[in-house]
Amino acid sequence: MEISRDGMKVEASNGEEGKRVGAKRNGERLVRKQGCSRRTRRRVHAASTAIQRLFVACKSVFKGPGTVPEPADVEMLQLLLDKMRPEDVGLSTDILFFKSKSSSNGTPRITYATIHKCDNFSMCIFFLPPTAVIPLHNHPEMTVFSKLLLGSMHIKSYDWIDPDKSSISASSAKMRPAKLVVDSDFTAPCNTSILYPTTGGNIHTFTAITPCAVLDVLGPPYSKEDNRDITYYRDHPYTKYLDDATDQSGEEKHDLGWLEEIDISKDLEMDGVKYLGPPVIDG
Image (cartoon, rainbow, N blue to C red; front, side):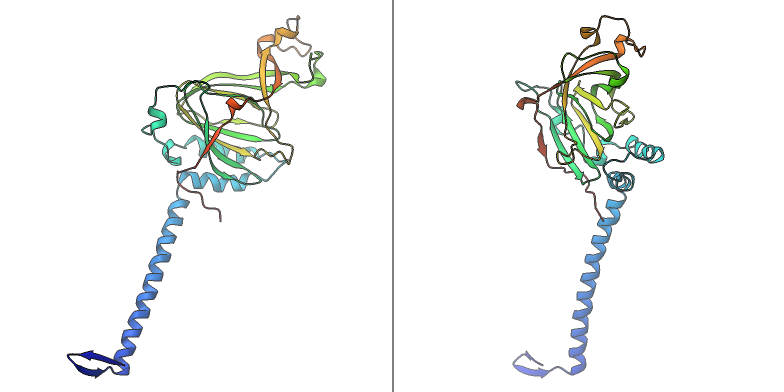
């Protein structure tokens, strides 16, 4: 190899050329190693985040449609969610959504961000402006964990009464008796709410008192193809269709209600936004 220097040609020896080539290759290997190190650091950082730990736990706990997590697994997920903070999903009270005190005209729009969704479970955050309402809705064949991350909201929930144990006949095929489970205000930070396919308040409604953010984990998620579509309801006083003080099961009237299936209006549709918090890595 010849190199021009001050008009003179100097022929590099094979040894010098080998050193240069070797140094170049070593440099390339060093760059590649540094790149791998950065990727490794990112994966290590992701594995250490609260949302990644929750994701890994969900993969282990939720076995698919037709299954309910074991009590020990429910407790594990509950403990993880109880420790979740707004920062763990990239939220802060400083963001514009939580600073805004003005309400828009009409029905307040609810937004949501999907963190992850697969056949066995989904992880999603719902953002509710003040006075926004997610109407009464069910969770067919699902186990659901709800963690209020920010704000205050009112939660009301019901479970169905077994029709075979009730002497009451509804005035409509879309009207069914249900037992009140929860009817209270909640303010973050608070414990995680858990509902099951037939207990724990499977039919619930959220009403925002202040701007709110709720992290929901559903297993399995909604699916029209698998007959797990969402249904909305309107509740009515139990006395509206009953004159007796109690039904034959001995339930008091103030703990019972009638749930009427309703069609959701366009005003109740939700807007999807991109999740911008710490990522979850599958694999």
